[in-house]
Image (tube, rainbow, N blue to C red; front, side, top):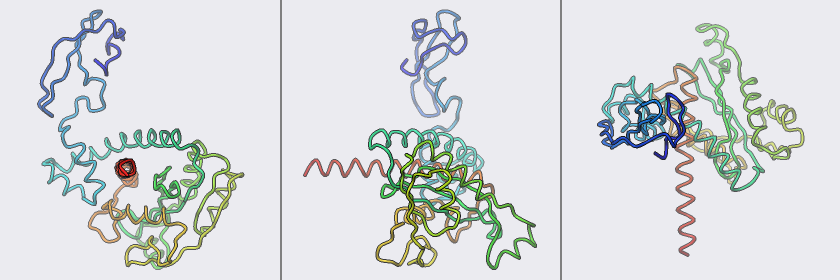
Length: 304
């Protein structure tokens, strides 16, 4: 009864709860402890208080989570695990809510273990919804040299360059929500970063204004962008030393792992909210991989 602390009907304390046998859950072939409340007679189980309560096909959760962060599209994942694509769409939303909690908990654990964050890299990732005529920007803050994201937002921006005129003719005037999205992100960063944090960014004209507004005591170094070293991977630079390598490498990795962010892909984002959910899941899986790598290196170092 480790997960059970009270009765869901009468809120009776743990002392009023007794074990009442087991039942076999066919969905994942587990035996679940059944519990009875001595005060009101309510029967429930250890599964009542879990986030998978009444969920069907629990077996696929971890597979779907990893596949969404391994450059697989929803239709391919549905064929792999043997479910309808609508199940993958709904499971994406559910997994994202769980990942957001994991990401917040993991970030707080990192600060508790290593102390205040001293250096942060900040930049915008460009993508689109449905068509190139509907661009999106994803402002992201990442811990320097660690690759752990601190936060992000997804916002619509007007088309620019040669597509600006085409976009306006086809879809009308498009809202620019990028400024508000960055402000919302910096309000979140104020809760986790010290006042004297150091920011590294490119030469975007809006970044110094934001940093001065939300972190007046912070320092800021600007590094002008260079051309990409690989066609289609504009984040990875030709220069021998890239001072923004952490965030550029993270963006390139996200494009390789999240199917809808690929430069050339069949899959596109239909709703910006689903892109936000997908990125939350990717960050959760990425941090798990980084944590496993860190533990592996610690074991190797301990073995000499």
